[in-house]
Image (cartoon, rainbow, N blue to C red; front, top):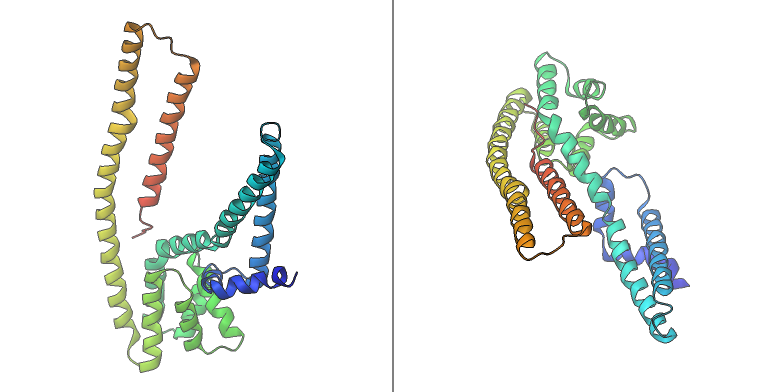
Length: 276
């Protein structure tokens, strides 16, 4: 019983990255509560698989072998489910990263315009938190830290540490550096934004080349091969007098649908989150 109670703490000690991932995902659940909830969910999944295995093979296998198989299935499914659920914050991290990367250039330009107009840095960040777009909520997190009494430099450093976007990190790093050194901020920020814009143009060109390869893959695997293959199959089955059942045709249709879906997923995953 003590082992079960201390299991979340043991998991956190073995995998300290869980706490970091929760912070990066902006998940406000305490790490211990998150791990405990994940383990309970994994336990339910493992029990469901074990019961399903037991009833599926109850009439075909002896009781002793069936219990051993059910325990093995329960253990394996528990481990797989626990790994999957504990890694779930990474999907939220990727979502946040794509959101920030999409608007990081506009957010940086907004900061630059406000600073060049003579607005102080803290007021610029406050105005950015009230502006439109997804990036406003990330500036709002910085403002919330400042409102709780955290110094501006520490709030920016904290945001830089726990943001999943490397591009946003570079902008925040420039702001932190300027606060530490007292140098002129607009020139440094303008150079950083110019560098980010150049990188995004390179990403677009790289995506265009990758899209050409994906289109070639789609034409060969998703169009040419199925049409020619189905034609050859019909011709061969006619010569050999093989009757093609509906199951074969439905299987081919399912295979084509899977290729279409995989192609759409690959195109969407390869697309850079860029808004120039």
